[in-house]
Image 1 (cartoon, rainbow, N blue to C red):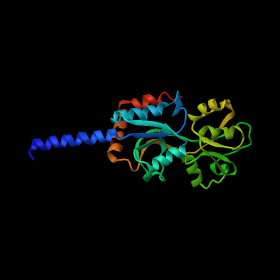
Image 2 (image 1 turned 30 degrees about the vertical axis):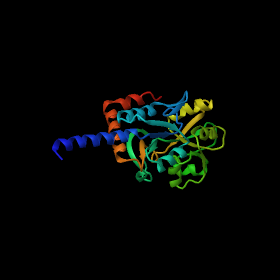
Image 3 (image 1 turned 180 degrees about the vertical axis):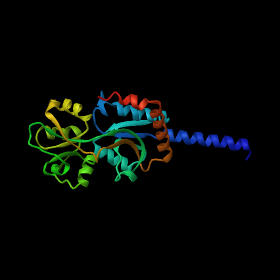
Image 4 (image 1 turned 90 degrees about the vertical axis):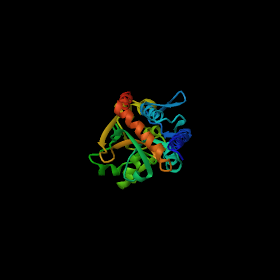
Length: 245
């Protein structure tokens, strides 16, 4: 085989490989978590959704689908199927080997909240054991509290359902981010002034990522990672996230 033939063959192989990778549908999965991700006019939107979509577009993946599920369902898909990109997912030691970590979108801090006027006193984490705490199924907050030996956890499938349990007095506490509070109050039609932050969960606070399922080809992971890094360097990620309240 002549050097020219080898070159042409190599270019053809590379072209076919990229075409094959681009042709595979990527399923980006997340949960209903305003203001980060939510549905508007039948489409999954939000600043974080924009970050993920622009990363996939920059990576050259034209065939992708963004879907919103209860978190446990999204988490299950990302553990079992190929070409699944899950976001926003906390990177913890227990999850480290379960995913291909593609990019840290933002850092997050969790706080325990109570409803104003209720006799719930939590000067330190151990004191919270005496109270019922609403959590999301398979969410990092549930996993964190379980790892600390908490047993009075009330599990919900959706953030709004979990929040309403606090409003209705079905649980004493819920762990939330400050960014989640305004949207949840609006959806539940309650006054946010009735919500009181009582304790910050420093150990549970972490980075939130987009991550691929383990069966996803390394080439797909790497292309997405490089595209995300380019968007970060250009300042696009920061600009999109400034849309958050």
